[in-house]
Image (cartoon, rainbow, N blue to C red):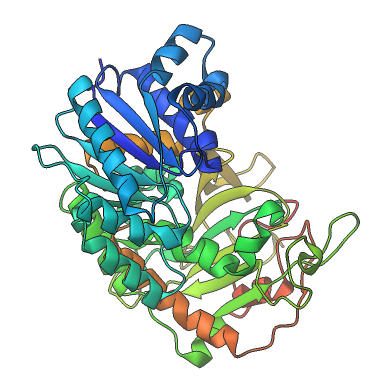
Length: 492
């Protein structure tokens, strides 16, 4: 049987979209598997006036697609309680404290408490401060852990201000900054592929790797997120968090041990060695785009809630350079955008070609050897492939590229825990491996802020790419200047 994790989860923003779509189903999966059983309780809170029965109906509806076992769903929902709460009203925290103390005794929780803030970021600091000042922290020997969603600030200064507020109430090892990408199966597999296979880790450096490419493509536009997105853009929304976390896993040194403190330490060292560009370098090594209109697809500036003169980028491509012994001279290319050809996330590790191609006979007229490429498919396909050169079956001696491939089948994919299930379980265990630490967040913001400063003083030529493409031409030119190209190309 899995180890049961005893805890009270206090959820701020219990009626929100994230809670209903992701958090309740994730908790139910943990309940089904026995990670939480008899000794857990959830206090949901928001400004809505809802009683326990209505709240449980919401929870039941949220998880109804996860199981046909109605009794198990009802038993799960019986652990949920609701307290109407305004996070800015100090008097309301006493009601939360009383309910928390009551449930701690009822379910024998040992004083373990998780405070999950699923609200707008401007409330993070307020809630954290009041949790401490109004006596909600457990003092009976259990743990206190704070979980917050992105965005964590909108630049380094605001992020630091927020972190200072959180640090006044919680220690760094008690703060879990969720980046759901770190809960994805193949993101976690990066460490297994690297450090579990000598064939890769021995070659994982600038002597053998020509470049690394990270692509996070989205097929949809901004949809109902236009209000948030126009104040954020692709750089802040995707690069500062998801992409920088993926890059740090690809670039870091091998940790002393596979535990959160050692892994975070190596990620921080990698990010600290990332070259922060000056104005000229930022202009050269980063490009941006905004989608226009084609067919039934509206231009970004015509989306509901978007200003007609908006210069917010919906696409970013860039070249990252690390100034350290392992990666000096090996670029990491990144790109992400909306309204692209398809929705997928992948990493392509491009190895250097042999120094001498002995199969390149002048009279053959055949193409040169292909570079070996390790591709890590993160979503929707999960798996990896290795492109190698092999002899084809024709007369004579000619080579052709061959894929050695492992892709998870649909059954295994269905059985794979979803990101929030993994991450909530990690919070209950107290494992911070798959959460962003403050030094990581700070380093990422310092890098991204410099790109943003340069873009804020330059007038872009928007729109500059059409929906269904892989972004503006400048993204291809970024690599072409280095005599390289994206491994994933449209219609490949």
